[in-house]
Length: 467
Image (cartoon, rainbow, N blue to C red; front, side, top):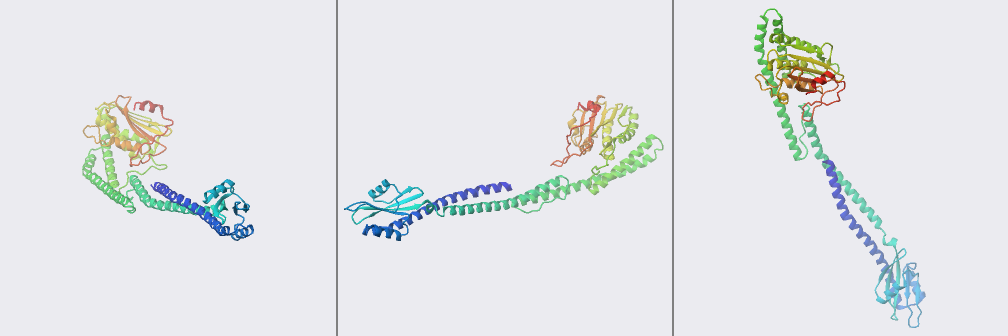
């Protein structure tokens, strides 16, 4: 907008300057020409009285000399009544031009080498017509014209520069509030909820800043209400959790009892984490920095050990592959455990008892792939299943489990795909990028970063190519 205003001002001012300067320069040139020939006419008129009285050479030479133009003036007297023709001064005009002026009796201007001559007819006492020739150099005709053009050009340049400067200041006054509004919107989109815009500038931009600040206040209030609601709802779970903990304590000894007590303790910790996070208005996990993350293989072994008891009760065959050696990933341990629990929970919830499942871990140079597959009926519409809050359409599905998995993968620059597994059912592939994190888009949504995938495990490719 700023440069557009400057360009418009430059174009308009230039046209106005040209429209006035060019005609004014032409007028000045004509005035200089008229001034030069007016002086020539006065010089010729100074000689005319003497010609009407006498034609004596000596007297006429003195008259011409007294006029101060003896070098540029010539007098042509024709012969008549026994008098010979008389020529005073240097003749520059052509003889036919002089004869034409003498015949017509009107003054004339004729161009000659180096300038022009004024031919002025004068009646003599004998009735003949003498011609006074006054030479006007070209320098005298154009005297002061160049200076006038230079002054006009300087004035025009000053006007153009002044208009550009004024337009630039006006543009800054308009653009600066717009830039602040853009920066505020970007900051708000990136999660800096304290971003506000100064309410100044032109009326329209000031109203836009007021609307933006009002919107930001409403967003902050809505988020605060959601955090309070999440904390309150989570706090309501403390009572049934207390009952479960007491009942688990009375189960006695045994693997099932120990697993139940461990699950209740983990659930209590998760509820406490949700409450603290909601109250403090902070994300659950900090951004992964150097050295942050966890051992994916260890987390997979731990969660599979947890779900194995339930699998044995339901007669499900299960398998773990690729978790026999450490696999470091830039993901918090709790986040990866939550994602695996969501996927394995979906297997137990949405497939019949006795359905087999497997978890495979594939470690590449710049990515780690975690595959969770089953031998169930599969997912008829993977895109709908990946949509947040849509769920699978079955009872007890909130549609948030796969969203947890998706956000975990996209936080590293990876993604999640759903397809058919080699077991005949559903396969969920979690691509965890090791060398970068996904940028935040202009709408504040994390999107996966597509990179060249070096060293991709062949087994992972074969398993995920159908996705």
